[in-house]
Length: 307
Length: 275
Image (cartoon, rainbow over all chains, first blue to last red; front, side, top):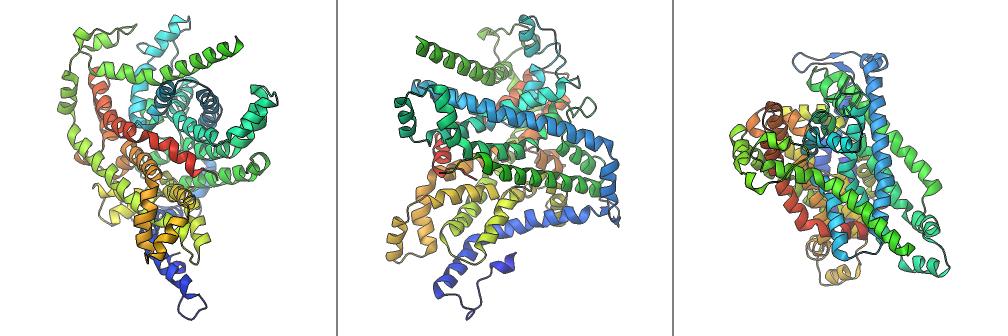
C-alpha cells in the first residue's frame, strides 16, 4: 500500500506539476499512512492469521487450519448471541431513524430560539456521557424493587417489571438505554439535513395548498433521503458494536439473552484466552458489517434522492 | 385553533422527551449530594436542601485513586484528539486539494477502514502493543486512536466545500502547499475541526473496551473503568458514593460539550454528510 504511494520515478511520464504534488501528498499523508499500517492494517491481517491458529498467549501457537471456522458452525451459543445482537441492533436502529426523525421535525417547527436550544441540548446530552456511566445510572433506575422506573409504572397501575433479570426484558432494557444515549446524535444529523432543504421549496408547496402531511412525504422525505441513508449506515455499524451497556447492566444475561457479539468475542479472547477462536468470531463480525453496508448501499439507489 | 393545538402538542411531546432524557442525570446529581442512602431509596424521590452534603465526593477519592483515573483520562483523550486532528487534517487536505497517483485507491481504503471496528482487531492490536512493550502504559490507549477514517472523511468533505479563490491568491504570493494549508485552509475550518475534536474527545474519554484489554495496573486505568471498579466493589454499598463518582466523571465532558456544541450543528450542516 505504501509503495504505491511513492512519487513516480523521473522520466516515467508524469508532468513536473504532478510530481511536485505527489511529493507533497506523501508528506501530508504519511502520518495517516504510518498509523493506518501499524494500528489498522497489521491488526486486520493479524486477525486473519490468528484465526488459523490455536493459541492461548502463553504457549506457542499451533496451526490448526480451518478448525476455528468449523467450530463456528457447531457453537450454539454463537448463534444465540448473534440472534440477540441482531434483535437489539435492529430495534435500536429503528428507534434512532424513526423516533429521531419525528423529534427532529418537531424541533424544527416554530418556537422561541432559547426553547429550541434547551431541547436540543437535553437531547444531545447523554451522547457525550460515557456508556459505562449511563449504564450504571440505569442499573439503579431499572432495579426491580427499588428503582424509580418501576415506581413510576406502579403509579400507572403496572406491575413491577424485572428489567434486568428476565430474558424478555433484559434485551429491551439494553435497547432503551442505548437508544436513549444515541438518539441525540441522530436528531442532530437530521436537524442539519432539515436545515439544508431550501425554504423556497416548502413555501411553494404551501402556496400550492399542500397540507403538512403531503409536504412531509413529497418534499421533506425525498430531500432528506441522503441523511436518512447516512444515519441507517452509521447506526447499523454502531448498534452492532455495543459492549459497555450489556457489560455493566446485565453481564449479557440471563443466559445469553442480552449478550452482544463483541462481549462474546471479548470473553473468548480475554476470559478463556482462546485467541484463535476469538479471531474467527471477529472475522464473521467484520463480514456481517461489510455485507450489511454493501446491501444498504445497493438498495439505497432505489429510495435515496440526490440533487 | 387547530394550529394552536398542534403547537401545544408539539411542545408537550418535546418536553416529555427532554424530561425523559435529562431526568436520570438530575437524579444522579441529587444522589451525589445525598447524605443517606435510605433517603435515596425513598420513593417518591424527595428533595430537601437541608440534607445535602459533599461527603460523597470525599468518599469516592478515598475508595479509588480518582485523581489518577482523571489525569489518565485527560492525558489519553487530549493526546488522541490533538494527534487525530493533525493526521486527519493533513490527509484530508491531500485528498481534497492535491493531485497524485493512487488517490482513488487510497480514499477507498480510508472509507473501507470505517468497516473494520476496533472490536474486531482488538486481539492482534493487543499483541502489537505487547510486542512494542507498550501494554499497561497510556501509549496503548493513545496510539490505536490516532488514525481515523471517519475524521479524514469528515474534514475532506468540508475542505472540498471551501472556495478556491483564496488559495489562488496565496499561490500567486508564492505560498507552497504547507503554507496554503496552515494559513488559508486551517483558519477557515474551525467548526469542522471543533466537531471532530468533540467527537474524538468524547469517544476516547468514554471508551471502556481498550483500557479493559490493555491495562492491568489499577493506577493506569481511565475513568470509565474506574467507575465500574467503584460500582463493582460497592454494589451492595453506598449508592451516594457511586452517584458522586458518576457525577465527577460526567462533569469535564459536559464542560467541553457546552463550550463547543454550537459548532457541531453548523459543521454537520455545512459539510453535507452524504455518502
